[in-house]
Image 1: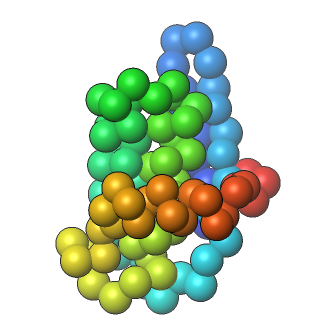
Image 2: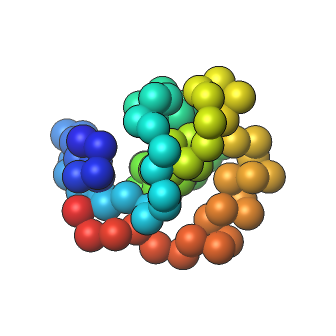
Length: 91
C-alpha cells in the first residue's frame, strides 16, 4: 500500500503496519524488497509480525537508494537500519 503501510491477512490474524519514515527518492523495488525481506525472515524463523517489520525495513532502505537490485540491503545493513529506526509510523 506504499506510504499507507501494509495489511497482512492470515486465517488467524490481520496485521496492519505503517512504514519506516525515510526520504524516498523512488518507489521502484519497494514491493519486491518487502516480499524478499518478509520471506527471508520467515525462513529464518522470525514470527510473522517480525517478518512484516523486516520486510517494511527492506522496502524503506530500497526506496531511499538509487537503483533497484543494487539498492537491496544486506543482512548487516538491515540490522543496522533496524537498530537506528526503532519504530514504524502508524498505518
